[in-house]
Length: 309
Length: 193
Image 1 (cartoon, one colour):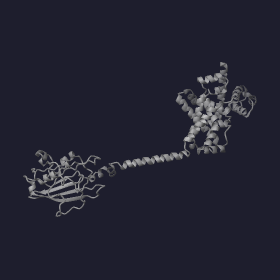
Image 2: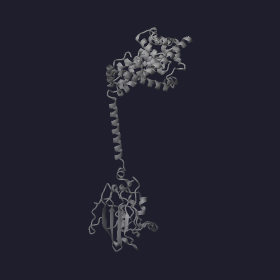
Image 3: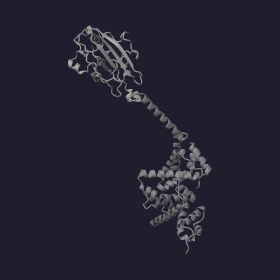
Image 4: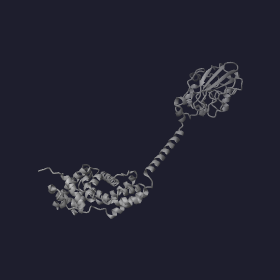
């Protein structure tokens, strides 16, 4: 017996095509007599499937489906979906960028971050005081202000002679050796002096004739609180108090000036051990550094380190 | 495939629907609602969930049609296959929700259902034991599909292959197995009666 020229599956496909075209199963089977026994039951099932109506959608289901589709269509605004998606995404991105920029501009530590921590941290201005013991004490105060990257690009210095009458400095000795006292802070409300124009020695001194150490010797005249940027709490600046051993007198100019200004009594009345514990004049004290980001601290008026002479 | 417009009409219809024309969606609904319902009903064996899923197919169609790319070479077959794929995905989600593993396994294997029919299917089968479509609903997913396309939708072999994403040879073998299993199912129901 020879091999059939067509497979059973192909014969079934041809017969099914004939059924779809309207032929009867008997007519289709006549084309493939070798498969008639196998194809006959399959074609009967196929004919039943063709004659029996398939399950149809009910009228209620059809209406419900159409209404639901129209409800979704009315909720959906007209227009291209991709265009709306792009516009929505772009608007969201712009809003996020605006919020980020606003937060960045309102961040207090932005300037320090921009300039880098090492360069943005302004060096503390230094105050150098030199005095010669004599019946009239002449002291020269030099305040050097280091440049800051944002506020004053060039260094500034200020020199002012201060003359103290000998009567105001009664006491055994006045140990006012030349010293260089770093300045760590600026006081709020300080009158600003033009920077970079140091007056000559014969000009009228900026400071009062009587030394008011609580103000003139501890503040940087050029620095406003915003400029300093390195203010620190009182307890951290306390060691910067220079040593001054003077017998306190109620009539002394320094005491009078402090009483007039309402400040508490200077530490000249402190015990000796406390004065000795503080660094002596002439020592170079390390510049105080403010904690990171704490540039808003404002020292109290009682935290002025240099004591009256 | 019957009741489907020509290629040029289908391209115009899809384009209008993509622009949001409600009339175009109505025409698409008229063309495909019955077909999709039959497909879903045979898979589910129950009328109400099949109608719900059919409506959900058109909801997804509205959402996805703006991103649909028209196949200019065979727009009708490609669009029909796309709609049936949406329906198949919805069926998968439906099975997942119901933890109804039997049909999911059938869909994966594409083989004859050895497990028994659901109670609802048994009731329907009892009412019309000789109902060929009740027996078809117990076939595997691919065999159901080939019977549906070939005998309910009157598709040719090539059209059925297009819709199923298979070769004509695979569809030939599939319809052979489907008819053989269907005959066995119908014979067993007659014996039960």
